[in-house]
Length: 138
Ligand code: NI
Image 1 (spheres, rainbow, N blue to C red):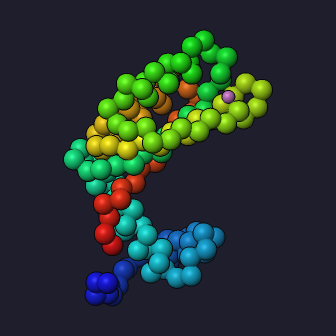
Image 2 (image 1 turned 180 degrees about the vertical axis):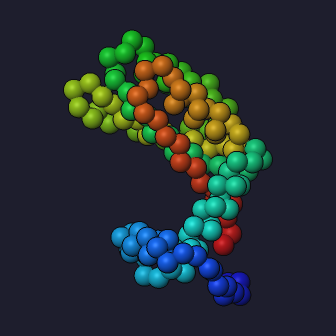
């Protein structure tokens, strides 16, 4: 465990009040915990943007399965990806819409590349990529 440092932060009262309200709603017990998580996430997001960092990506895709060949196209892209596809989950949301959750792992640039292609595929209504890395020691 590394040494803990304390530091002061100056900011407007209304900004601090909004922050307290927000983190309270999330269940944080104090500002330090919330700020630690924000700093960690900031550092992780910086790292995952670098090509040589090992990155885990979670991609969510919502699409209408009636669109001709769309699920085949998405599956084909995953088979040919330059990243490991660790898991893929398909949920039938309603009569026509599907949610696919895909966990991929590889170089940061390759994870962003394949996720970008999946999300941009014609017919995908909504897509998101969340990235993290196991290479965070703090
Ligand atoms: Ni489905």
